[in-house]
Amino acid sequence: MRFLSLDETAAYLEAATIEQSIDKGHCFVHIGLNAMGGKFVMMNDAQGDTVVTEPSA
Image (cartoon, rainbow, N blue to C red; front, side, top):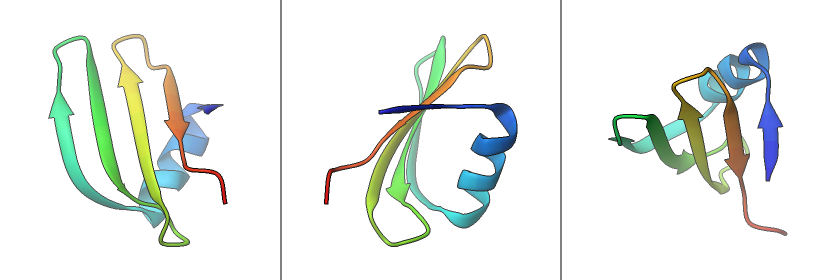
């Protein structure tokens, strides 16, 4: 699990393929493939904080 800045989040999502986005009211959850084709789950909360998790290789 990694915490990302707004710039890091933008760069990550620009290179990613989002398969599903879920609006939970207080946060958005994005599920998809990262730039290397690996699965990821990202959460953006209402305060602009972002965390992303990817499986270990």
